[in-house]
Length: 82
Image 1: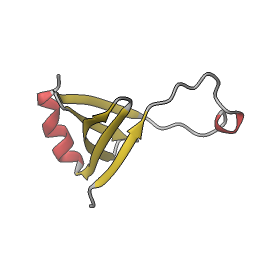
Image 2: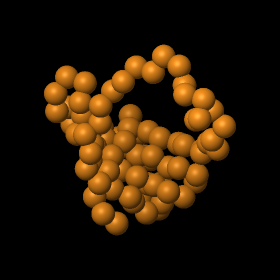
Image 3: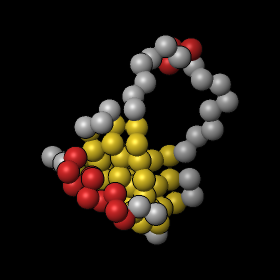
Image 4: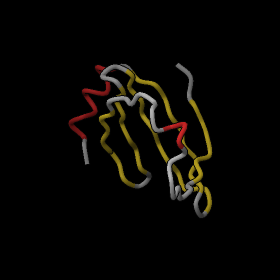
């Protein structure tokens, strides 16, 4: 499992492009275990689990650190929900 680092930029989308309307969705459950900086646990499709930390880099840009984690570890982190 490799640590993924990216700069996240925010954009306002006024209308969803048509090519994305018929894509299959996925089940997502997420919660925060910290708020400053935001620390998020996300479970996608019941078995892909991620721990994410976001740090403000500049106005409108966050640096995001994301690591895949074991589902049992995600379950243990649930008791620290904010």
